Length: 250
Image (cartoon, rainbow, N blue to C red; front, side):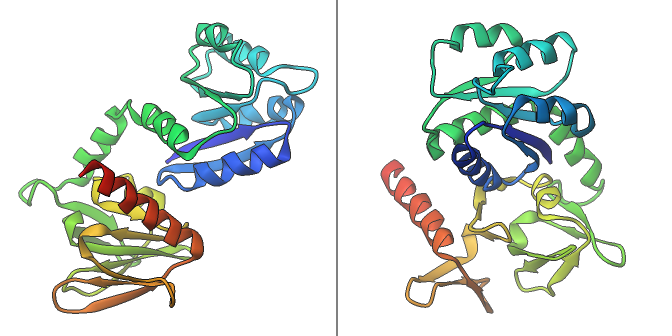
């Protein structure tokens, strides 16, 4: 999971970016700041993988911070988020990954996230470690309370965060409580068939059979048993956006 810090002198804009970034599987926000001094004080300790950075931050600009991190050889990937486009060319002198203009749309942020995920070497290495020789190539090991289980991710019906554990509902099998958080689990699997409909729930679209708007629930079906999940209003919006986009591409 990549650690993220967000810096914006406008609390409203900071909240919007934070909320959208939180929707992505393998990004964990470890710091949110409204001025440059707060960031400078904490960044060496936090060591974020990704920094979303505004340009205008009081006494010190976002560009100055980017320049300092570049010369200090920080490995942090920087994304500038600003209402001003005139700094875009200068920004890329300091290995800035992306430059997003405000207001930030979900579609534009998604393109940025995909760019941040491109260096997938570490993920491939994790997959090699978790795949067990002699089993199906797609089998992955997941830690449980008492040991581990070996599962092909296509068997996962849904995931539900439950305090320190994550409940894994499996097709035609016993459910398991994993001793790993949602982000860690998702980093091990191909996420193309999975959709995060809230901070605590991820579903495998292969098993989705029904969505009830009135009762705000969705029904998962593995061919034998049904499994009901309650969904929030925002979760319903995520489902609508996904299927609307899918309809356009079909």
